[in-house]
Length: 245
Image (cartoon, rainbow, N blue to C red):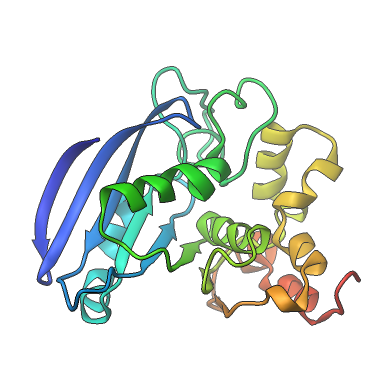
């Protein structure tokens, strides 16, 4: 790993790192906030997934979350939103390619050789964080917009891995909204049956009560994308239905 920058922040350290990601076949960056030491216990981790066009620095520089994380003794990990580099496939649109990985495993060319963000976030990055930093294995996950979609599918597909999931203005039903349809078609192909495992509403319908964890969805009612792209009420309806329905 290579440290790109480091700054004192609320008694802790805000750092940015680059490493080779085997699952993505490219170099990746992530930002991490390490809170001041409070006791001898390793601190828990909150993974934050950002939205379309973002990278690992957006939440770091705009949210101000380090102040709260320092008080609570929580490590913040902010990965990038997609693989990047000259050799990594891209698109001219803001909602596909670099900055728009949708936190899934692509199966279609030219995306499949690099766009495996789900595997990276589930396995490779947490293992790296555990190895390189003094952290607990307790973790939660959160995100915004596309990152809210990512946080929800990560939690729903991996019962027991996260203690909670929070999503702010998330894309909850990507197989039924323009942003999601464009991305899922490109990354997974035309067969819509392959999309369901990356759709929070479908995953919620298939989930079991014993796997439930605290879930927070926070959505502004004046959001310009609420009706056409986000539709959190669809996820709420799915959550109210009996398992398997």
